Structure formats: C-alpha cells, structure tokens
Image 1 (cartoon, chains in turn green, orange):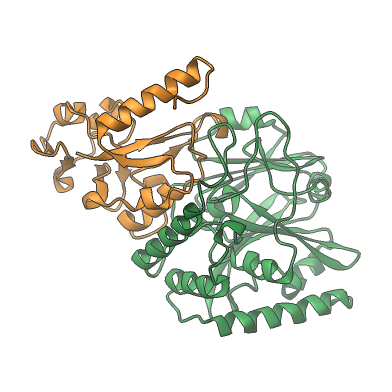
Image 2 (image 1 turned 90 degrees about the horizontal axis):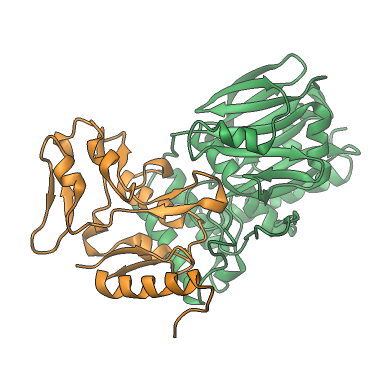
Amino acid sequence: MERTVRYALIDLQNRTTGLKEVQAGWFGTWGLLLEELGFWWRLDPSAVALTTGPLTGCGAPGTGAMTWSYLKNGRVQNLTGEGRLGAALRYAGVDALLFYGRSDAPLWLEVEDGKLSLREGKPSYTTLAAGKPSEDTVVVTFRPRGAVEDKYFPLSDGALSRRLLEKGISALTVDTAGGLAVADSQRLAALCVDLYHWAAQNGPAAGSRQQPARFLSLDHTVGFESPATYLNPARSPEEQLFAALGILWSPRLEGRSRRADTAALLEACLGIPCTEGDLDALEAHLAQLRQRNLEGGDQ
Amino acid sequence: MKTLFIDRTKCSGCGACQAVCSLVKRGEQRPSEARIRVRRGGGPDTQYVTVCQHCAEPVCLTACMRGIIDQDPATGLVTRRTEGCFTCAACKVMCPSDAIVYDSRLDAFVTCDLCGGNPPCVAACPTGALRFEEPAGASEDLRNKYAQALLGGKEAE
C-alpha cells in the first residue's frame, strides 16, 4: 500500500527548513505510532512531530485528525488533535512537520503552499490574525496551557506545547489555496453525504454560531465564553488506528461499520483496494510497534 | 424556485457543505474554491456561510461585461457560460452575498448552480442550518427568528 508522503524538517537551531518525500509502506504508518520513524528521535531526542493520515482533510466527518508525537522517557507519546491545521497542511502539500534542534530566540513558522519560512519573534494571536494573507489562513499559537488553533480550539495539552516553546517555536500559520487530489471524488462525495446524513438523522449535530464546531466535526465544539481544555480524542487502540489514518469516528455515527466505512473512504481517496482485513493487519502492525515502544523501543 | 438558505444561528462552521461541494464540483478536495464557502474573516467568532442566492434581480448579470450570465425567466436560476469568462471579477465585486468564487481549473468565476435541484450540501449539513426551500417560506421563517433573537426573546412558536 504505497503512498507518497511529504514531510518538512524544521531545524530550529540553524533556522532552516526543508521538504522531503518518502514512500509510506502502510496507510497509517506515517500517521500516529512513529516508532518506525525512530531515526527522527535519534537526530534529536527532544524532536516534536506533527503528522497527518491519508484521510486527513478529505471531507468526511472527523477527518480533521492529526497527531503530535514526542519522546518522553525513551517512549513515544502521541496526542491526537482535531481541527483545520492538519487538513490545511495537506492542502499546502505537507503531510508532516518535524521540529528539531533548539533556538535561543523565539521563532514562528509560516507555511504557504508548500513553502516554509521561519520568522523571528513571538507574535500574539491578534498580530498573526491581523496579518493573515487570506481568510482561510490557520493560526496556531503555542502557549504554556497548550497549542490553540484560531484562538479557541485547543490542539494539545500544555506538556507538548511547553516542549515546543522550550525549543523556541511559538506559533505556526498555514495559508494555502491548494487542494487534495482524490482518486474517486464522486464516490467520496457520496460516502461523505451518507455519513453526514446518517449523523443528522439522530437530530442536529452539536454546534451553533455561538458554539462553533471543529473542522468537519460532528460533536466537538467550543464556547466563546470559557477557555476550552484539551482532551485526547483517541485513547483506545482502535481510535488510535483510525486517528493514524486521519479520521476520528463520532459517537453520532453509532450503527455504522467503522472499519468498512474507513476502508471505503481509503479506497475512494487513494484509488487502491482496501478491505477490513487490510485494516486488521495494520492494527496488528501498530500493536506490535506499540509493544516494542512499551518495552523500550530502539532507545 | 427553491434555493439555498442558511440559518446562521444553527450553522456551526464545520465546513461539511464546503467539503462536499468541492468534491462534487471540483473533483478534488479544495475548500477555497467550493461554491458554498465558510468565511472566516475574523476567526471562528465571526464566521458565516456564503452561497449564491439567485437574486430576483441579479446584479452580477448586469455587471458582466461579456454577457455570459443568464437568468432562467421561468425558474429564476442564475447560470453562467464559464467558457466566455475573462475573470474581470466585476460580478464578484458587485455580488451582495460575496458568493462568487474563482475556479482555477476552469479559469473562470463560478457560482452555485443548485446541482440540478438536488444539492448534496443540504443532505450533508449536520446541524440542519442549510435548507433548500422556496424563498417566501424560508424568508418569513428566518426573518421571524432573527427578529426574535434581536429582541432577546425566544424563537417564535
């Protein structure tokens, strides 16, 4: 199951950025359990990675999924987030970000249609929002209490955010007019409508003008009055498998076969055959990696 | 003629309509060129959805220098012959709904064509904010609702 993954290496010490392409052997290998990418942490044990899955940003409910990973006591920690950031990165032609090294002065990263630039300073959300090149620009600020997208949507807990702040990265913006090519757009559109319609049959999904929902989410909203706190939406091994693939299944889609739907979405997106059996095999592979991680990994 | 209406009090800004529109009309996922757009000018607290309202007297039609925008006299549907568009953006500038988007594949400005009377974005809307209705009924309902909201009262029964 090959697909090309583009990841950006952000060297904070030398203030350089670069894009690399690799062939991902499995659907989710480059999505969540990054033990396979141990060489990243050999480069810098304090490195922090943000990865997306093959379904991230495809348009189906829950496909705003992305995953932060870092090493703690020699073991990889994964935090799943949901929002526009992962999708926007993919539309900009970047599937993953790796921050390594450490800068003494605060920096922020600007991604613009696959072009990455490190800039000096620790701008506030307001400053970044005021300077947005377009209304679709995603602004993420790293603060001690967590990473926050577009001022309101928490993407991580404070531990991850503080790691990034210690490395000298204080904000990230993604601006793109790009898109995501899919193999069978009509089938994907029909699947998306079917899933949204299924959810709506149980009554309107959460969210309103006063409580906006996360990107493509059916049930994760924030209120403007009180600061929302981060909760990892992918805790069970199955949820982690789906998050690795770039989708978080909503409880509102109760009654659907998550594996069958995920396989169908992958087929429509990637244009290669995918069955529930393939997902079982991938889950077993991820479980093996997780076990190796628990036993100490490559460290 | 039925057209698309957005109950902004219900819209959560999730972007489902935009995502489905992009897949159907563009053949890829490119939200920035979907014909129904979630606008985030001032962040999530000021977001709103824009889509062609097929105005009774469309200003885009009169603004178009090439005369490629038409209105069906029977149904009121506003359509355009995109092959003649030379992207002067006069229609976009004039549109009161900010509902005209640039399609880079067609190299033309485009609007919602209601997908032949069966818009998939309506079926996809998970909050029920997007409706495909006759203007008279929808307008009365929405005006009543907004008036109640402005007055601080509850929704009218």
